[in-house]
Image 1 (cartoon, rainbow, N blue to C red):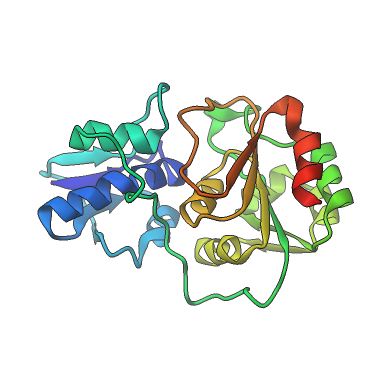
Image 2 (cartoon, rainbow, N blue to C red):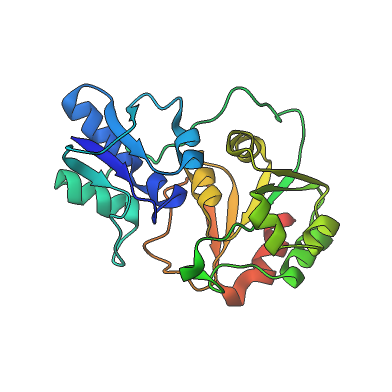
Length: 238
């Protein structure tokens, strides 16, 4: 019995199924074997106490798959109920590693995330330059940006003019930057789900992806729909 990280359902989707994995580990009284198909997702769970990394799903029964998605309820609740046949409860929070090998806790900064998913979401997640200009105008903190080189390329050249610091292509470092950020403003992206798993103070600017299914259980997660972006950004940064 294993868990499979479907290559078409990467970091955000995998974070959403961690409550179901944790519960399964409790039931079986051992860490659950997980096959990761994307290395950067695997790197986010190196220290997870209820996950055991294995290399292949061949000949194994897949109990949980990161493609367990729906539209009627948040995916972390849906996958939990689908696997365990009971409603999700708060003790089964989403999980991500808080890497101890990097530490930015001595610095105060606002983290902006504008990561993009595959081609199927093109145009449905991106937060435009003028909105980031508003963030820059009202932020009292230095602005940091993290993600992949692809994320930066899509946001270039203007992101370089907005951000005071840019860190790329190191997912463990990115998780530490998320963990230690004072404030976070993001689009609907995998690292926003990481922020929710870490209960960070985050404002997610929602565009056109399904809203109910993609919400996370973060205790300090806030949302702004498209017609609310400017007002909620200003209030968040006051």
